[in-house]
Image (cartoon, rainbow, N blue to C red; front, side, top):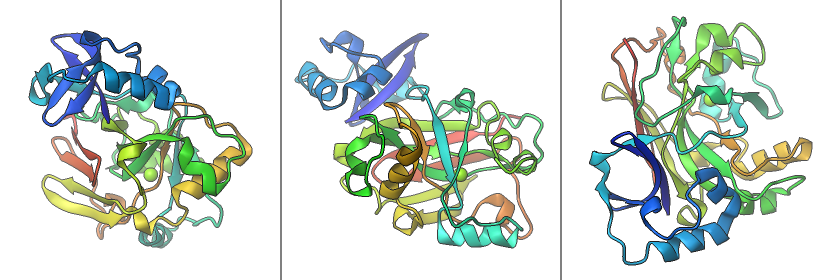
Length: 283
Ligand code: MG
């Protein structure tokens, strides 16, 4: 199922995407329409939605609504240097590539919609990072790698937008990764049952139509299972937490010479089986 949050003529609603249309859950008998509550409700909530939309035709075309960020996560964690070639390009830039998983926070106030503008703010080194986003369903504490995927509710496309100059201000990366509007994700949540293997997905970034990143989640250094195992060893991953699982090579800062995003640039991030988000740089 593809769960989406959208704005239709100023009214915000939650829907299910069917082909090129949206079923508005508020216009069905669905018992729950809040995305976080649906995530927490898991299989039971999804079963209720499936029965509520049987025989209902989409209320709108996708082109008639504005898609919004699916919800605001509780925690928005991201792992750095988690694709081999990207770790190599980071090393060339003087970044120490850690042996352990390298996690940082994106403040959840950075969340924005899948087609919203990116505001550069004060950075002069605006960059993109396509990443597979993993949404935690059932809370996970001390979960083994083998059981980890049973705690995943669904998947999204994330652009871990980065202010490279500010990212280098501190070893935690947090400030330079958390500018307002620097966390677009979506375009909808694809529930885990539609992605039987999240480690075989092609992912790509285009800037103004030029292909910049082109890789596959099979190249992850620490896969999703070990990411959830590692984090849940330390703290509880709660329903709705969002994990950005790393970006492949091809980021602007690693090009020779570096090329940063500028006003008017259009960044398109796409992942097989999920969809694409597209964000223009405000100017
Ligand atoms: Mg990243």
